Amino acid sequence: MNIAVIGAGYVGMTTSVAFAAYGHHVVVVEHNEEKVKLLSQGYLPFYEAGMEDMMKQQLKLGQLSFTTSIRKSLKQAEYVFITVGTPSLPSGEADLSFVEQVAQSIGTFIDDYKIIIMKSTVPVGTGKKVQEIIFSQLQKRNVDIPFDLVSNPEFLREGRALKDALQPDRIILGCENDRAKMKMNSLYNDFQSKILFTALNDAEMIKYASNTFLATKISFVNELARLCENLNVDITNVAKGMGLDKRIGPDFLQAGIGFGGSCFPKDIKALLAFSAANHVPFQILQAVQSVNDSQVEWFMTNVANTLGDLTNKHIAILGLTFKPETDDIREASSLRVIEYLIQNHAIVSAYDPKGIDQIKRIFPMINYAQTPIGAIEGADAIILVTEWKELIHLDWEAIKLKVNKPVIFDGRNALDRNRLVDLGYTYIGVGVKGNI
Ligand code: UDX
Image (cartoon, rainbow, N blue to C red; front, side, top):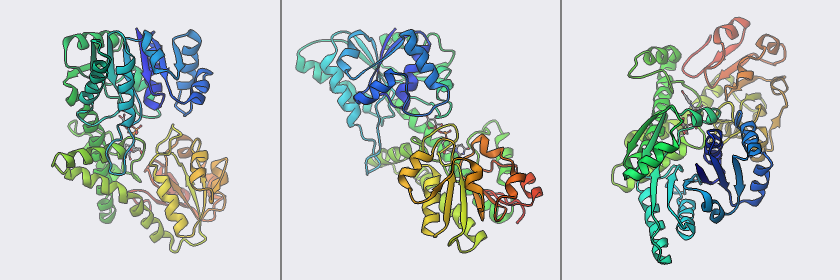
C-alpha cells in the first residue's frame, strides 16, 4: 500500500517505520526542513531502542522517504495518517490547531479517494470535526472527492515503541462505514493483533480511557504506599498480592515517585477539560492528578526528614528521564526532585544514560557526571529516580566505599533492598522501609 504519515514525531516515526517494515511504501511529511534532511540521512531526532537502525534499513530499501510537502505526499498515498502533536493549552484542553491545519491541507490537495486515519490523541468529536473541515474545503473547491475518516489511536510505550507498533495488543478502529472497515482490514492484514471496530467517537474515548485508567492504577498504589509506610506495611508485597487477582492484574501497580512522560499528564488534563466542558466533573481523575502532583513532594519530605537540613548536603541523583530506555524528560519526576533540592540548598550531582543534555538546558547550575560513580562519589545520599538497568545493577559494595554516607532513597522500589541493607546502607523506598 502507499501510505502518507503527516507529522514526524514519536507516533509518526514509529507508525512509519512499522508500516515500512511490513512492506508498505511510506512517505513521511514534516514541515521542518532541517528535520527532513536529517531524517532522510537516517538520523532520528530522539532515542528509541532499535528504531534508528530499522529506519536506516527501510530508507535503504526505498520503503521510506521524507518530504516537507503534504501535497506531494498525497499524490501517491491512499492511506493518510495524521500524527501531529496535540499539546496541552493552558486550560488543559488539547491544542487541535495542527490537526485542523492538516485537515485543511488534505481538503485542499486531495484529488482522489483517501482514507484518513487519525492517530494523534484527540478529544471525542475531533474526528467528526476533521471530516467537516475536509468536506467544506472540497465544497469550496467545488469538487466531489470521496474520503473516509478513521480513528486509530496509538498505544505505544516509549522504550518499547517498535514492538508495540509491530505487534500491538489490540488495534482500535473507529470506522463509520463498510468501505473504511474493508480498507483498514486490508491495511492491517499482516498484523496478528485483535481488531476492534467501533464508532469514531468510541475509538477516541478508548485512548483517553486507557491512558487515564493506567494512571489511576499508579496513583492508587502511590497513595496506598503513603499509608503503608505509616503502618509499616510493605507496598511491594501488597501490590504483588493484589496483582495475583486476574481481575486486577499485576501491571501498573509499581509504587514510585510518580508518573511522567508525554501522555499520562497531558491526557489527564485533556479528559478533565472535556469532561468539565460536558458538565461531568471527573472526580476520580482529579484525585489521580493531585496524588501525582504531590508524590515528589511527599517523597522529598521523607528525604528531608531522614537527612535533616539539606543545606550543602551532597545528593546524587541517578536517572533523569521519565522512565528507562528513552531520552525523554517531559514531565519527568527528576525535574521536581532537582527543583526541591535546589530550593533547599543541597549540592546536586546527577547521572543518566540518555537524559543529561536535556536536563542540563533546564538546570545548568547542578553538576552532571559522565558515569554513575562520578555522580555518587562523596555523596551524603543517593536518590534513584529512574530505574535504568545499568543503575539497578551497580556494584553497590564498591560504591559504599566511595560515598560519604551510605543512604539510598529508591524512588522506584527497584533496587535489591535486602542486599543493600546487608551491605550496611540505610534504604528507604516508596511505601517500604529497609531498616528504619
Ligand atoms: C503510556 C502508555 O503506557 C501508552 O500505552 C500510551 O500510548 C502512552 O502513554 P509511556 O508514557 O511511554 O506510555 O510510558 P509508561 O510505560 O506507560 O509509563 C508512564 C509513567 O508511569 C512512567 O513515568 C513510569 O515510570 C510510570 N509508572 C508506570 C509507574 O510509576 N508505575 C507503574 O507501575 C508503571
